[in-house]
Length: 234
Image (cartoon, rainbow, N blue to C red; front, side, top):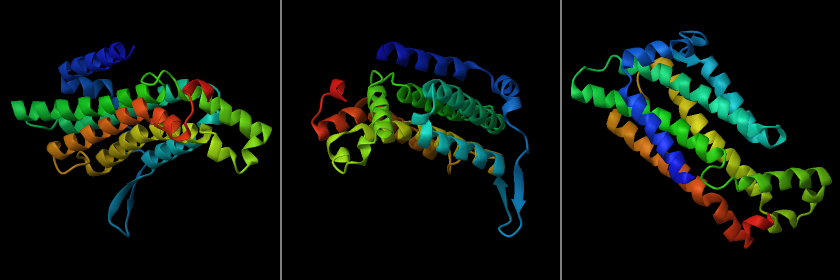
């Protein structure tokens, strides 16, 4: 299952890299929101993206209370795809101004496919593709324990890893959303990528990929190891 998922992710990335920048910009133009929600802070002489901040706030709240929401995985999937397209809409505008030589085209591919991969890897990791949806039982167990009141026992957090399943899953959801919305806001107000150059942007992307993959594959196993429990027993 993992290799098939990675093939799909990489395959879409390759196809995206082949799409001309002008076509990508045109296809995602509706998601740029133009200047809507941007205001100027006279005191700081800076632009503030209220729309981006609002979307980021929605993401944070959802990732905190997702375990109370029915079909939260499906909702998250739709939301992160929307987030990814919004980020790509802005990166397409910026990369369309890069030089037409091989260096400029390579930089454009790195930026655009890099943002796509954040969303794709984040989506796969958060919905459980990389860990066989191990978190589902823990999240359901925590919700049940909260309703029954057993969570009030001071020994609960020392013997039951469910709360940490909930926290880790929320973290897996929020990390890619935070990265994409922060870049969306920065590209709207500063009209450049959120890095000194493409090299540093690439390094940031690689570190983020490593973090997401590590947490997705090994995070829940690490929690089980700390609590000395079998995943099936959670």
